[in-house]
Image (cartoon, rainbow, N blue to C red; front, top):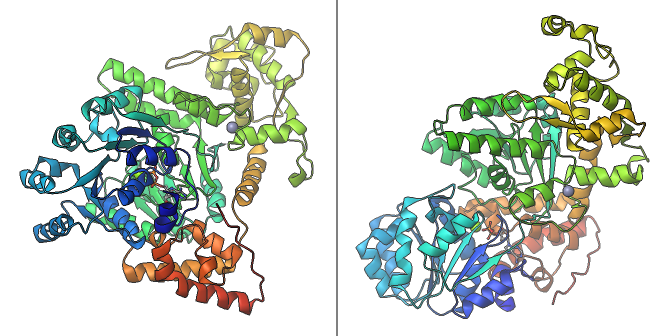
Length: 623
Ligand code: ADP
Ligand code: MG
Ligand code: ZN
């Protein structure tokens, strides 16, 4: 199997669980695969398909994706085809013919085909060696993306009782999983679940304040790389895309209000590397498998962690380090609540509220964000420091108080004094007021509500002068996280001091917390980490190869990543392979790509090496 992996896909190693799954499948067994986006599910059926003698059927819901996947397979030298409603009857008949003559190894089909008698009789004449149901959660009404056409698939086991079946998905609660297994009659299937920790994703939450300026700063680092920015409303996507264009970014808006034609044109620009920034509502993402998205921004915090996880999952499928940045402000809560309030059913409204609170908790954590996220999905993260979230990065830096990269600046500060003032105010306000009110009292705001209550005569009125409202709010969040303060649930949450908080108030302990301006520092540290996480390569050559890739892709009318991934280009711009033998060792170079593209890439690489008098680096031979 490893030889096939290299021959066709050019990869030297399997990703976690791929090898086990592939071996299980080629032995003729059923299985259910739960693996995160970007985990490499496709290979789990594509590789067995190449080993087995008949044809492999792949059921997949997204017409737009089928073409990309088939193009990618063809470029790797695999005989793949697809059948869906985008083809004419004549084209379909032609593919039927070639499949019957054993000229097609992998056949992608849309689920609604299984309702057609002519399709079913076509299948009867074939030797089907394997059936794969991709995005298998679409079969379940309990899932988030139910497709009624997937219901036809419950026939599969009856039609092909002896054919191994593999169902794959990145999202399945236990309920959805049981539903998939039940409907596809996979009762004998082995279940493979891989870790959902995407190590190459660096996640962080920043305060949504001067947000657009922060967004611009962030995007400066991604002038050429693909970026997705998720917004709250259609209007917002248009505005932000427009603003970004006026700052000379190649940004396009994408939302469900656009015509189907405009939407697919925008997707096309993105997939073909012609517009690198998509500003979208959540409607964007399902139809693309772009592997090199480097940054996913949530400009408004999302409604659910399920949605959040899926959306950030679109970053870094190629395995290279990538960044996910969430802009958080409590003020955005109102936008979500406006919609939640309109849900008629009491139970589902309450559930939506709970889910929203989970996201808010996530955004306000002072402990590892990945741990929280994984736990939410039922997985335990073993490491104490994930190394991939802002909190863990900060912890590492704050713990020593010293970071070599930043001249030993301490990023901690002692918040004991403001913390005691906050707790005292909470108590004096009889644990009956909300966070904003407590802050207004501490800052001595001259407003009616305060004087009306006579709270301007409290000793805590106006005793904070060195911190802003936002800073106080961060200290309060920290106190809530430490369980010194508790915040009630409901529409109008109030703050109250806990027992722990009272003990702290009366004692003289210190209270260290991340410095309030640490955001920028953390961002710089993550930037350095991301750079270090990848290969160091010659940027100029990389850019040149990127241009070459784009030319070849346009000529073949395929997305650039189908020719070579960024991983491959980076390796080329690091090792400078000089001969076909060396070129073949580059990750992602299989036999077909070597033959098709080897000479032309080598010419550019060798020319560049000679011109700049560079020395080549030996490419390690992988087992
Ligand atoms: P999923 O369907 O799980 O989201 P894909 O099958 O689309 O993931 O794979 C994501 C990316 O990872 C693709 O670009 C694919 O080429 C790449 N990939 C998959 N397996 C490997 C591997 N063993 N080595 C290197 N890259 C891989
Ligand atoms: Mg997939
Ligand atoms: Zn972490």
